[in-house]
View 1 (cartoon, rainbow, N blue to C red):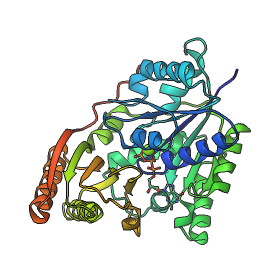
View 2 (cartoon, rainbow, N blue to C red; view 1 turned 180 degrees about the vertical axis):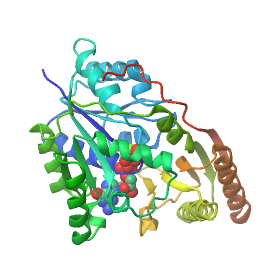
View 3 (cartoon, helix red, strand yellow; view 1 turned 135 degrees about the horizontal axis):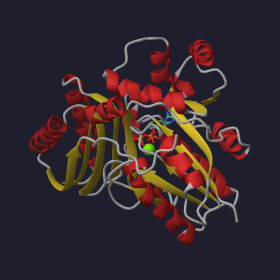
Length: 364
Ligand SMILES: Nc1nc2c(ncn2[C@@H]2O[C@H](COP(=O)(O)OP(=O)(O)OP(=O)(O)O)[C@@H](O)[C@H]2O)c(=O)[nH]1
Ligand SMILES: [Mg+2]
């Protein structure tokens, strides 16, 4: 039995998980078995938990990117093969990772263990609004080394999924596309709204028909700059349990998020992606997601939280010092609990800067 393995890369918050969930559900509706491998520098992942709450089987490679944990990636692919027996696997790489063709795709094509699937596609996602800024030479909200990493992801894409097309006016999309086509002749560009099923079906078809075949070219990559870009980002993962009066959970989450966004902005810490998985009682759970550029109406994503116990898993990827980011989150939670007279218990917390990338394999 052949298994389709789709590698999905692209910057933090560009919409990889959203698209994979939609595509997985579409394929599952057609009777296919689907498995997902998530990937992150941290260990307590909102995305994995989110896939699981939606009944999409997910395993994870944690504590570093696929490239630096290549053997673990193969191990997780083998695990999915033996347990879920999927027809289709999506592997979502961490949003700060580039050089995936040389360090993941090519090793999987040529060095993989027997009975493991070869990658049949490689899609790189990008947020249309952020890409437009970059393409038109407008100021980017990140430092130059982070922008280098962003650029390299775009450059190495065989198929670039210009995602969140719904958030840009048609004329802005068109002007951006003409610059992109001139700059990267021959690159397959796919405009997509990953919240729209018809667009997701189109993405699945494109992968099935070889339009997103992995590129043959490895990137030229300055690992010093790439490492500096990764190191400029701070990772914070925190699991909290709030004890609150009945029916106030929604308000507590609202206040928590508003305070975090406010303090990050005041401190000029640019968000790569801030994600929360919020869980109350049975059926009361949601992922709240804040990518680099604002989203409107986020309050509407907060579920009814009726009970007295509230679990919050927070994943913050921010351009900042990890120490300062941790201090900021700590202060926000302390101020909130004092003001609202609720309690918060930290179950786990980890904060760090990703180490210098050191790929297991790098094939030119
Ligand atoms: N409007 C709109 N929002 C989208 C689209 N795709 C994703 N989003 C939103 O973008 C945010 C980030 O989406 P994710 O799918 O979590 O992004 P990601 O690339 O997996 O993020 P990381 O794994 O943290 O790198 C969420 O709020 C999504 O709902 C889209 O096509 N249109
Ligand atoms: Mg994701």
